[in-house]
Image (cartoon, rainbow, N blue to C red):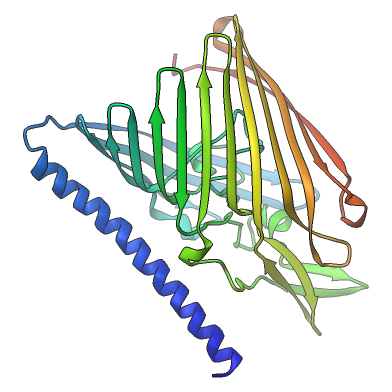
Length: 368
């Protein structure tokens, strides 16, 4: 068997396994409904519906791009539960100008949960948030980012659900959380040529030495089998003085690295999928009308592309300190200071230490 045929066979096996797994999740959720209805027929079932409708319009005028976006969508969450189990689904129905693949009906989350006295187990597609940062990524590494939309939205609109098995052991003042992700999922990048974010995350053309090249983004040998599975663990402690969480993650970097290969009239941005290890800690300290937040992540093997277009590894530290200050009249001030430090960054196309400061002022008007 030649190399091309062998590659196609392996790819076929991976896609077959992915299809079997996705089918298995759906069958498991369906069986949970049947088992719950037959085994707990006398238990009372409760349903809950909630959601929101949004009409968003935005205009971009900057050095990178110019564009206009119109989004109309309805986000609906529904849950069916009794004393020992719960079925949850979140669906987005809408029209997105620059992301036609999202238009229509998109299932954001769909999972079944077993509810015990001191433990619970969730199986299916779910969005799993980590950390205390607001809009910045420090330890929040489980659910990939959805970078296709550039209008301001809720957290669940900026994340993708992952197919996961999540077990939690619950105590009065602590929680242990174990997560297994059989198949990895990666950040979703803009693909529409008129999307203002395309020039930032996925440019289609590049000018080099007075010549313009077309950029192409192949998928490559994407990790898509059970042997590529991921795991995570987090232990949280809750007290009157502070809340603290310790976490660890071993899996794939959600941000796929790209290195260029130049041909006669195009540049092929070859993907590099990289496994990472992350250890993290986050803390929240309430003080009257204020809540102080801190978060630190250490990645000993983060992947980067150096100045010679070669994949390499470096130690990386991410840290954040912030405060949420509740003022009178339903006003809220949020301030955050973020630091991103990479060891031995001389060979990388970036500074060794980068920092950012965010500040927001919010007021509730119609949702008092």
